[in-house]
Length: 369
Image (cartoon, rainbow, N blue to C red; front, side, top):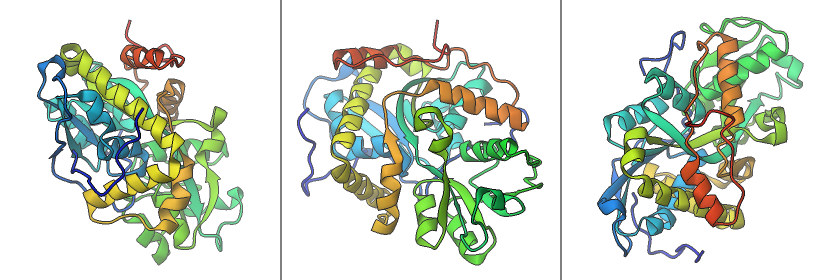
């Protein structure tokens, strides 16, 4: 693949909840904010399926760097030919799911909890997960003066982004594995789980309102830059140190009507991840430049430098870990047992991977029949 452009010539690119799930699901990063739709200038070529535009949504977060880099570097647009990429950014999973359901976007980058929530709420009719994007990038960071060991977490106030979100569920599951008791709705118990938006958590930490946080990057590294210490990297709790943090989803209607466009976008994400992994420093700079373009502020080196290597960019959606995460939410009492059969359609992705001479990825028995 030809190297993406890295010169100064850049272009702007671009639920009622489940029973017992009390709040919406999100995993927004430190300092993220929404941005109006942007349309990338079309690359030369024929329109795919005769389609003028494909509408793609993602978050201005490091865990969505496949989208950030693929958009900014024109990698995804190149695969789309004359079909233009129109990008929208979101701060929360539920709003992105609503946009997908309304047809405001066709394809989205999103975390596992809102993907599960959106799928089950629609009785399996709204979306499919068609690819992976990122793994990891979640840490338990604490005030080292108050918490020196994992056992010291008991009795402390620990922030998570939101009741029922991906990190909240992971922390509640970890608490249960320690043999401690916490009411999942109120967050009260042997540990006080304080639901706090990621953009607010650094100030809450500095004020002493919380003693630590179980949060995604770059919030975790922001807290470390403010004096916190990493006590646990969530990846250490998973087989192979891999667990899904970001997937690629598509509306079922769009997938049925424009399968070639979906395949083209997936070729773009596969090539983007390949480039990110081969050029980590340049990719980090590109992602940060896109964040500045979208939010008006780049992440400082003391935040992005430690955050970036903790995120793995992968085409594999790590389906077994999504199934496990849903099981953790059920065990915590935040989710009724979901039927996830058919949530994945990895046919288009595996076609792309085969063309690249790479092995297929699995859907953990949760694919379309």
